[in-house]
Image (cartoon, rainbow, N blue to C red):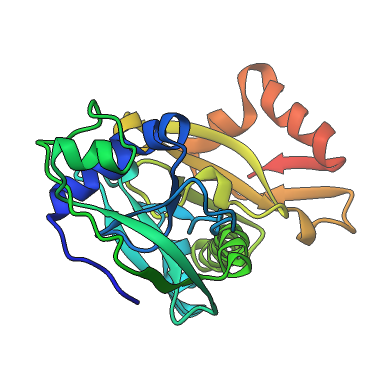
Length: 277
């Protein structure tokens, strides 16, 4: 692949700020040939370049990222926020299948005003008036095949689902480990800086009550408040009509509720009679 090395800062700004102008006003098509070079196919070139792009994933989604690494993907870090929620990775396949192409190419890097006019670029298109022009020969190169990029988008979604599935399995194991009655009930801390969020709770665990134990909500870091919740394992009571549950004294109030309102609601939803010990 032939690439002309140019100033990274100039090319980066051109790529993001001038692309729309070039495609809508100049008739140029931007080729995905590399992050360091802005490649533009001339208007008369009829072969369509690859339209797909590599997917991105939030930098704070460390679980899904770890799974994508297991599946053979690599990452380019982007962003400078102190909160990883606002930064992201470009996800690429290691050694992807590629498509080859040959095209007359304009490499933008350092070009004078009269040179711009000579190749049909509007003089208003500038960035310190520094471009490089190379139209002496056709560009021969490779781009990742579009199906590889489409597959990468699907794999990012799969990785997020797989990570949630693993989290739920881990939650169930932790629930059993902290349970005082062999996996029937348990008290777990959720949210904030704790290990688990509410979305990690498996479907077979039912919430009997909760109380806020720390006000930790921070949208900048995607944090919720921290809660202490009482859970019961529905799979353990399927063949029972009535169930005795052990609840710590300090949590009995939230499980029973005023006038027994909470325990009555739980009884109706589970279809089982619950007795708090």
